[in-house]
Image (cartoon, rainbow, N blue to C red; front, top):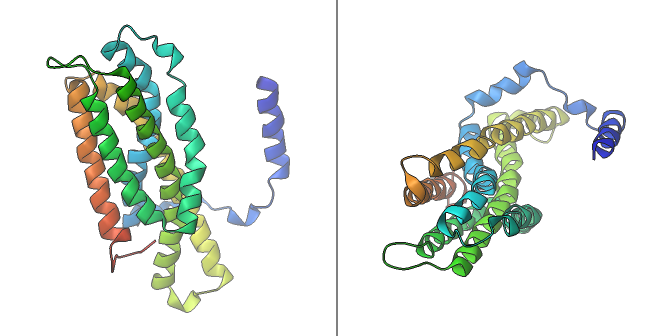
Length: 243
């Protein structure tokens, strides 16, 4: 594995010279901190990628605690696997339709999947169902993957529209294209870095005083917030930046 990493690192260093024009200083990139849509996309991507890596870390623990008779190690890898496999599908569907619409409906399915996961958990009134729990969680992982792809397709469209409105005199010029590309790339990198904290926060929430049910309820509230943000800014008729 180490050999492959070194090999592809060398290929990337010497062979990926087709993006030299996209170089930007920190000063060039720091303008994103003034962009409202950068922060909105951080929230939206936290709900998808943050959930994906957070659930990937917490899934075995949740199986062990809720269904102790089940060997969690036999199933733990399946969630991250299906989430990763469905990410390209989210981008592909968004390219064919609309990233905002895919993201909007994807969040709705995420809420429903979390509700289903909670329903199949053991409780004082019923013993729960591992099969139902597992299928519901797989749907949740699938939606995180689709959402990862759809939110990323939104970013370049958002910032292209933003810059074309901000500098209409430059519309269609190479200069504006470079600005859009640099800013979009910076936002992609920054939102990814922020969302990566999901690997810490999601398992921490499950282990906190919130408990399993409290954490899932908090996540539902968060996903509903994302539904509202996506609809208001990007997917509704006359949205600020339809994408």
